[in-house]
Image (tube, helix red, strand yellow):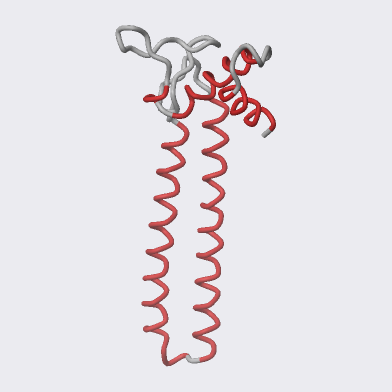
Length: 139
């Protein structure tokens, strides 16, 4: 936070008064390149120039290196929800058994409701697996 306050102060203070202004302006331009493409420094032709620390693009710019470990980690975190779906299916059928033990005459209705709940849980599991695959193979 102190760095941001210094950057803001360096913009307001004239260069003759602030001898430490040059590194802060450099840091401000690097920070500005992450904000929006409209705020990136531009050349005379109007094209965005390379940032101070190599080629730094905006948030949507493709990176030069592929961070495969991060995509695998995101996929693994998303797959935790499949365990939640399995737990939900187990609770659903446990509730079916308890309901049939309490009121055997409602066996058909309870089984119908169980199958509807099973369909919702399976749909959720399929969506989670698709999102995990998307995270795994994304750049």
